[in-house]
Image 1: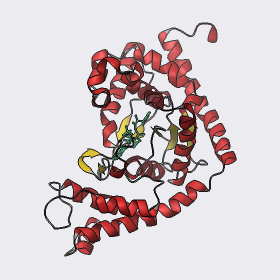
Image 2: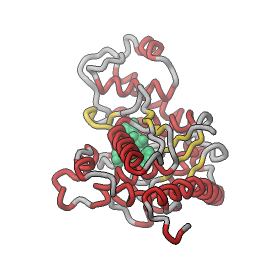
Image 3: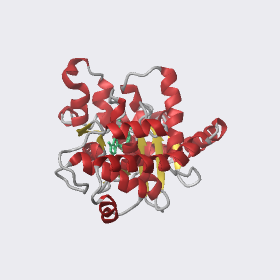
Image 4: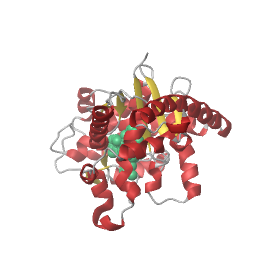
Length: 329
Ligand code: ATP
Ligand code: LTN
């Protein structure tokens, strides 16, 4: 049997090139090697404020972006989290083996709750447990994600190991897959933060649906470091970020890129980067627009069926392990 991968993105905001480079790109590359599950995590999106209509539309949009990024529904299972109720059922059971202290240490929760601790939703606090349930339900081997999800993956592993210790071998303990280059693309307006779809400043991100003029304008405004040399240099995060985007969208090597920009200025880098991004996103957006509603419905229906099959088998085992199989046998 092929080893499994599972990953997902939230249908909140607009997906950006950071999401593509850090996640979607790797999913598409790994799908031929692994039995792959790609989920639109709309239950996670409930932790963000969003009206139901937008949530519904974004769920479909995110799935279309998966497909545009090269995820092939004939090869991979593409589905919507809320279509498989086992995700929430397992979350409850895992809640009972997860500790408050573990969730309190999650940096994403700390950042998102900020000073609003008392008013933060319980869902936001519990978010990593739902994520653990997503992963463990499918007996996942590998989870391709960006750097920001590393801590959540470590928690998932701890929960799996604790459950296995207390109730017997039930879950496969997953490994993160975080690529060495591009796992943390930085915001264009502030290289101290990651590019984020919940950032209110839209100029910090290149969205996968941005048009050519918007892309050119955003890169033109991008913050740069002091100095003039254009090369990969850890001590100059802004330039290195722009070069990394260029590297991963064009597929050129670092040496080629540094040679290409030798003696050139920041303006040239920004304009070449904008053109490379437009060149990449033009066919991407054509694929995105080319997916009909009917096709998407068929993909979701097939995905739901395949995902449910695996999720039900895991839940049957889990229910027995914890002794709640009851009348459902
Ligand atoms: P938000 O910033 O609003 O929390 P997000 O941009 O992190 O959202 P998610 O849906 O939570 O979006 O993430 C989808 C995937 O993209 C995850 O695997 C995440 O690690 C990855 N990712 C998100 N931002 C970046 C980034 N700036 N660079 C690389 N990968 C990223
Ligand atoms: N928390 C993730 C999204 C996510 C996920 C998952 C990623 C939810 N469930 C399972 C990998 C595996 C994020 O990117 N913010």
